[in-house]
Structure formats: C-alpha cells, structure tokens
Length: 74
Image 1 (cartoon, helix red, strand yellow):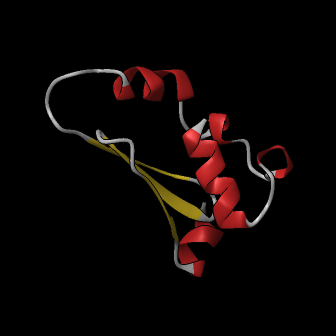
Image 2: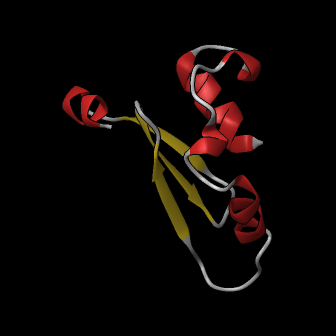
C-alpha cells in the first residue's frame, strides 16, 4: 500500500483517484513478500507510464519523474 500511496502523492491525488493501476505494472503481492523477507539488502525498481518507482529493504519508496520521451514510449 505504501507504493500506491507514494505514487498518489507524486500525482497529488488520493490513491483511489490514480489514473494508473499500479498492480497492472508490478505484482504487489510479490513486492510485499520481498518487503517482509529478512536477510540481505535489496532494491527493487519498476516503471510506470510516468514514473520510475524504487523500493528498498528499509521500506523507502522513491517515485521519480521519468523524462517525457521515456513516458511517451511506455
């Protein structure tokens, strides 16, 4: 849920008002299992139409704007 909230925050909207369905671009259950995994450090990055999202083992979720040309190709 933190990923959806972070993307919604980047968009400046409520999570239910997102134009993109995050679950269509990444398996949120698999990401949740990864987040609950104890052990080595990890970083997971995936792309949405207008953003690159990075999640780290410490629970940090970074949402970066992708360049306009990359967004148009996606």
